[in-house]
Length: 100
Image (cartoon, rainbow, N blue to C red; front, top):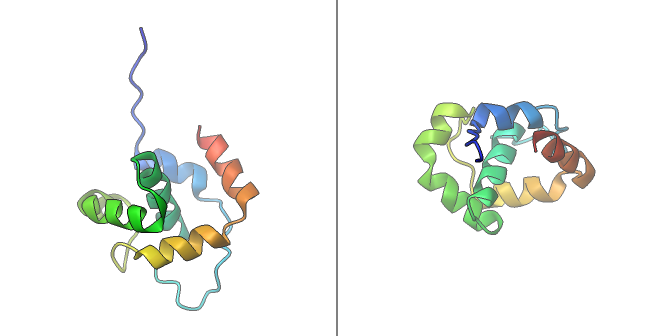
């Protein structure tokens, strides 16, 4: 018999908080960890691409705003696209594998 395992957003945050932010410091409106955690959770929930992630995030707005640092609200699809394209794949993979 398998045991249910609950994963909180705080658990996910712990594994991605050391991820290096590849973005310029100019116009950073959303913390990297918040964008990455939303993207990971959105994809795991079935979102496909930046538009799907942004739509999922809007549907889960109350949960996300209560858990993540989102001083400027839910990021737009373009934020997810830019951030995910800029991340170093090996660094992201290392964090993801650590979480798994």
